[in-house]
Image (tube, rainbow, N blue to C red; front, top):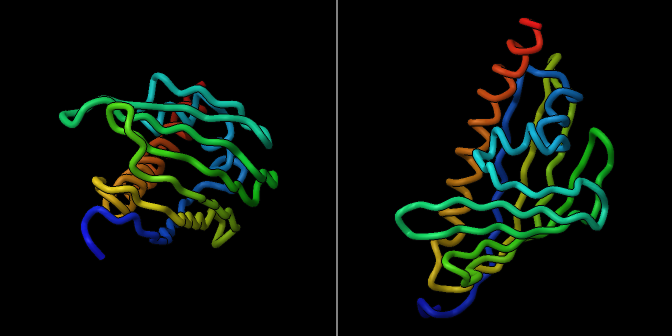
Length: 153
């Protein structure tokens, strides 16, 4: 396949968080919490079926914008959404993602699966997998700090 052809990829990431499922779910469903672990002060989020989400950040490559829509929300169990990623106004990936939440050992097993169409030039699936891996690792830190913050009240 030449470097200019679109291609499709899929990846799955799993994390086990010590936090209960309700707490882990809240980090995805409450806009202020999600903005904190995403590191996006510009998060717009309507967490409902058909609702939109928009976030962005700037780095050395320019302005990155994610725009998506929620297609299924099964409270505490599953989120299905589709989103696009653009750099400087040009969409380079379009994805369908699902997040599953399961109780495990007093904590939560989170499974994130993404299917994407890569539109070159792009950092592609490797960039998206790396980015989501870092975000999910950051979510662990956010959940730990959130528990500490609640305990201090």
